[in-house]
Length: 304
Length: 335
Image (tube, rainbow over all chains, first blue to last red; front, side, top):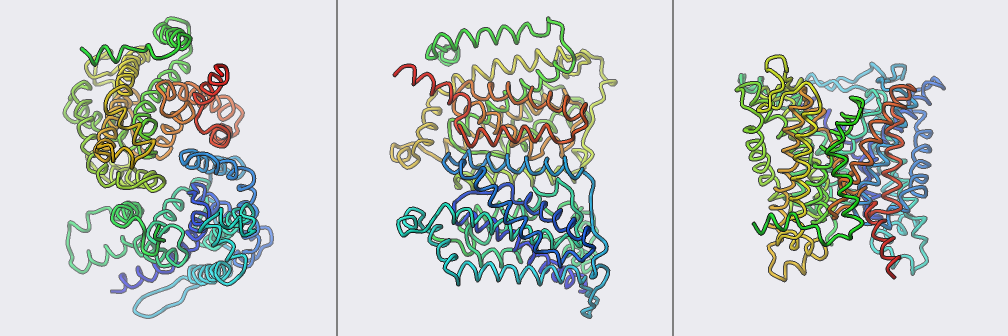
């Protein structure tokens, strides 16, 4: 029982962080119908930013979050004005391959600058501490803090999107760009802002997970695919959808733990033989495929 | 007979193109006669392999407009079918290759039917997802060697073995893949003028219009997807015999899928010569950049940075690729 509960708790906690990862993707998609393949690379850059800021100041990475957020915001805006603006004119193929090129560019730039080795951080004040919830469920404090701050960041972006004038302008741009332009909304700047918010939120997520996840230049694509799965499940362009789908995908990622629970419960041999941990991410991809085929609109997607 | 005549009929291209194509064909035939380094030879084989991958992608992605980013799964199916059959049951290449095509086409039907309900971005990402699922399954599947993959050791056989396609010298591999290359060109040349080819182009232009004209859109897409799959699977089988050491992590990686799509797009998707042009530019560029900058200057990753820069430039400036530029210049000259 304790394995099941701790798997579910771990899944929910990581799911909250993943929801923040996917938020940027869904905002960008919602505003300008473009899929950003470089999303995981933004996360990787956020992790490096958090790591180096924490190492150089000697503080816990949780206190250097603003550095990562600023880096991500600027990165998003630079990417938009330097590259995406030009790709948007082309057909869909060009957009797909263009952002893929961006991904390759950022990944290899990181490889050139930082080298290919895994880097991780051990001096955070929360590292090694944990809460005992009873029933044998132990929650690492780093993951709890990451999940809590992710929810805070998520709420902040949600409030920005729904309660401010800028957010209304963003929504208007995503609903009808031409109409928004007639109403005097600077859509070009709104697009750039969407990229800034997208980049900023994902780098915050990166700086949050650097406490318990080592970083190397090749890790991006995994998170890109996870973010795609979340966005597909939640509905492309839907912000609340991204949150719930993040929790679901977090639990899907804990399927190996749940599988272990059933293996012990039924004491069955064939279940123990299945190499579940190697198939950890397969379930995420499979979930994406099934969602797209069964319900392409996602759980909370817009009717179009 | 009619089909062969159609395949050999290149008369709708301007004469200048045909002269250039003829010169390139002659060059490809006599290339091994000239003195060359083994590195150049390996690059040429890579070029031919990726041209054929690109031709396969071009049928569905170029003529049909369905961006498929999951071609690596079929490379894997072809390669692992051939390798498993050769190692475990000593079945030669020429028998295992059609079986590999069969498996790949079956798999393409299984995933193609649900996949083609999707469009645009959704389709592209779903193909990536299926490709990664299959890769993960192959990485834990003992029959195909799990994550370590399979190794064909040439010592067991007596090279040159034409039946099993085990050679020591690359020149044999070169001519085998060159044969496939010419067959592929002729096939695509026939395909673009076939009934299915015209149906596909009308689907690309306007799917609803095509449906209203009585074209079975879904079936046409699935059929073309199977054709593209067969192309990729053949080269996958060849890849197993040529590389001799295949792992799911390399053979079925996302990078291969994207590279295939990229070749065709850089050259010009939806044109006969596009994939060949794209492969002819990107493959030598990639391997020589890696050799000069990556290995010799010690700058890891700079080759791929330059490479990514080219991708970004092409997609931002001329999304229709190099062939698009050629056609634009021609149109301007005519008017």
